[in-house]
Image 1 (cartoon, rainbow, N blue to C red):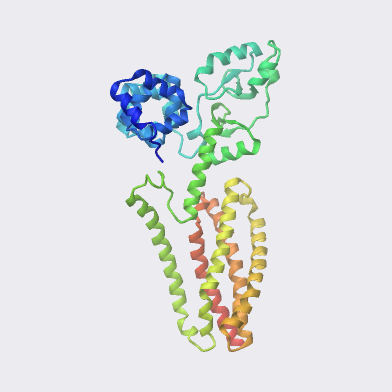
Image 2: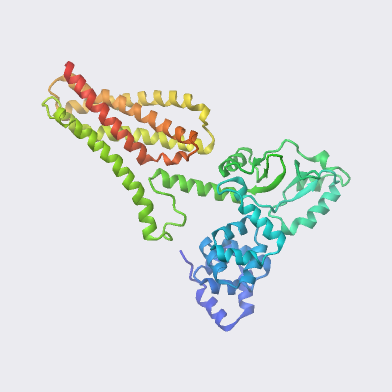
Length: 453
């Protein structure tokens, strides 16, 4: 929600050209609070306010503005001023900005950026979306392995103005191969003449530049580190991924998975920022797909319509919704658990047999529990013509729930093995498949039981 508390005062200061007041506004509060109070301003007004801040304060406030407002400022403000702002931004943030601008605007700004920064932006833009290379920053502290502690500290002082973090210092050789890691604390407490190569930790965690960004997030969480180096196949260090970038990755991936699990094509923008037509398309495509799957359920049920009209089986139709919902719910549970486990790295494709055994056992156990209540419900509600006919419902529940747990667990693994996002095997999709399977099982069990009893 837009905070309008300071909007009248800000607009009044802008109209009067109150440079002192605007400068004080930019420094009086935490940058995040300052950005909140600026949300109601237009892009032009926001940039006028930011122009009264120092370069460092301007960057800090700008980074707390919403992504939409940032892009509006870059699209509307003077090209030369935006080029300077682009250079001052962290390497990974400026790449994100350039990627989302129109091609003409992006090229116009890049033409005004110094050659070194322009090459860095173009290099980072080349990495595929969703990879470690796409979210890394090239602003990291590196020190030569041949330096002493005193020389390393001096090297860090020269680099510090352009670095995103200086707690971890990455040790490299003359060819920029990653050799190890030292912390700033180690340098501060060690003797000045100690060699960096004697202090550094050699067994360090890194991630390949082409690896999925989720792998980097999992490694950082597993080893509880603030940043992870990104390397190529020859083990040259190319950049680092910091904890704030990993938080963004986790939120992005969790949001995407939540959308897919709910049967919605992932949104690029926020819920309220997404246009009605875009929202209707992203929801409608999945609804049409699920509607088609539902038609197969109807067709399957209608093909048995003649068999179900016999007096012995008329009561069976009452429990159709119960049967298919039980199978769909169990399948959705399994799918959600396995998709989450795959995302967190708790389960891999090599664990498929363990997953199958576990879900088979779970399906039989849960199905057996529901079968007990199903048998009682059949006797009380439907009053089947033959006592043995009441077994149709419990036998079906055991089979359908077991089928649901197996399909719900196996399908995400199949999607992962095909290189697809397991979350595509959404909860509604799994439920749709189980509906068809449940009808087939239920009707055939009913026919067999009434045939023999």
